[in-house]
Amino acid sequence: MTYPGESLFGIRGIGSLFYLSYALGQDSFGGLERELRAIVALTVVISVVLHGVATPAIGNPDRRRDGAELSGRS
Image (cartoon, rainbow, N blue to C red; front, side, top):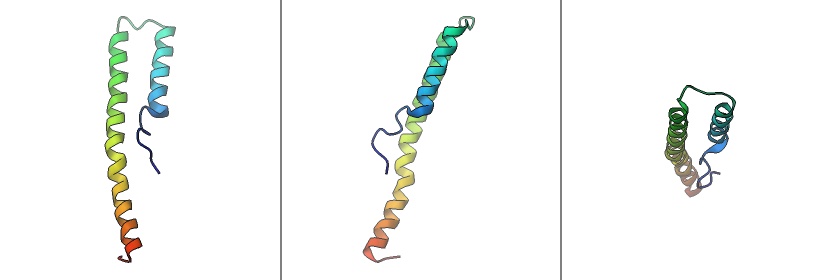
């Protein structure tokens, strides 16, 4: 069962933010810190949107199949 907001960030999104913060604290990236933050943030946002769209789309055929089985139709 999925829950609303389940894909919000997730372990990979939080991990991406954590590892970026760690890397930026360890070394200088020649002035590219702002761009790196933007790339990681955009990637996390795209992932959240795609997972938000894909989760209901994937679950919908299962609900239709389960409903057909419950009503006696195959």
